[in-house]
Amino acid sequence: MEIKIIAWILATVLSALAYRAGGMGQESTARPKWIPKFMRRSWVRDWPIAVISLLTLLLWWQPATLLGWAMLICSIGLTGGAISTYWDDLFGKTNYWFHGFIIGLAVFLLSFCGITWGAIILRAFMMAILIGGWCAIFSIDYVEEFGRGFFITATIPLLLI
Image (cartoon, rainbow, N blue to C red; front, top):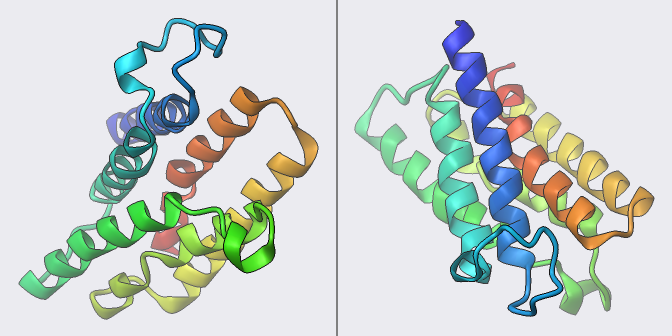
């Protein structure tokens, strides 16, 4: 069990780093400076985090059927898509509360293969509170982005409730 906890913690750190890297511009003043420029692409935020977070779920839970594995793969795609939007068009400005909620809800297909709706909704609301609250408190871009990336993977165990 300890190795799974360590792997989960490492995955949350990787998610935080990927979220920040994907949000950084190419300018030399972006912080932290040690993140290489080749990682400063928006896709580094969206797709690696989706893969990392849902692979982390596999530490404790695996789909029992081929359909379940297909739903997990589709959930990776939905999560990556959810990470890629901040709902500016819908709300007229970035809405981190809704951003977090939709990222949490993006795994809804897992309800067809053993993850309960209650757990999915709980995680979605927790993501809304954590991401929205974090961004309401902090206004420094790298602090916000490290936090948002961290929460995506840190909340994965809630799906096991």
